[in-house]
Length: 149
Image (cartoon, one colour):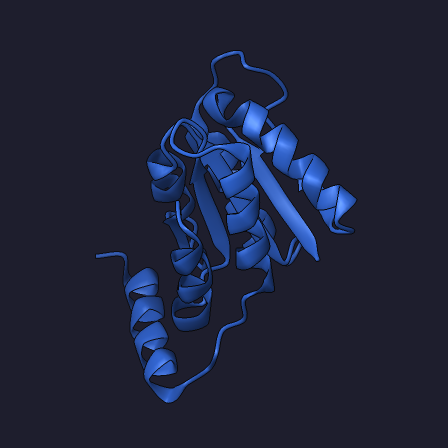
């Protein structure tokens, strides 16, 4: 799978770990930065990942900041991105299966590398189940995304 990944300075180290693990697992990684722990603004990297997914340059995306919250908020401003901050395995698959989440947000100051990797693996394995009730709800989310008011 082709995975876009991006982080701010707080998420840089976790991004590097996850990127290496993704490559080792056979995924194609599109690293959209940042490239150090020097202070940067998370919206720049979250938007880049979101755009990569929406434009078809990646199948899924991962954004990382200190808490995961800011990166998630920024990523969802890109029309077509469905992103949530996830710190447990259940939400990692449920958000894809029921909500067709296409970008995962992680908090580098909240979880460690081992749990982050387990969440990433679960997110990448999960598939939208397409049940009628989930398609109906997703259509409502997409309508909200188009209207933005």
